[in-house]
Image (tube, helix red, strand yellow):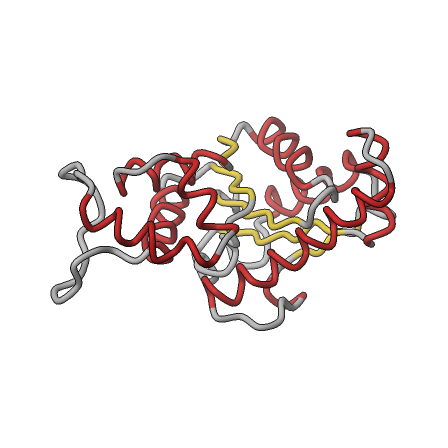
Length: 208
């Protein structure tokens, strides 16, 4: 098989998690999402909940860096370069992403993994997205949200996503060229989208 690492970025309610799990099951790969947060938290000596908050809330970055500098760290944990008293969060989570990819046979969902992994042999980078209208409709159907709450959730998530890419990877505008495949689930069913990804991985993808 040509591709041993598939990174899936997704917008809220576009079906990226479901597609990722389907692809992993079809290929016999590990599915990794929350594990990235758990491993980063373990290395940092803080709770996964704290890591999750930092990913979403820029003002908490200073607080977690302070915690990282004082928390006990296992011997195998991240070691900061000379001259730094604590690892920065961006480097820590990127390290975990790279370590996870190095193990191979894995589908990594979220955390902007396609950006730091770009150029990795055997990598297939995928974006799963859809229009705000279709994603709002999915939230109202699947979670029973009213339209106003669903619309706000999509808008807030899209804004946080833009902020995340800028804060972590200094990318002001996400582009289709950051990915090998862009899938619009307004048009494609989740099963069809999974078919496309699995077929591309088996064929070797764009960088294998």
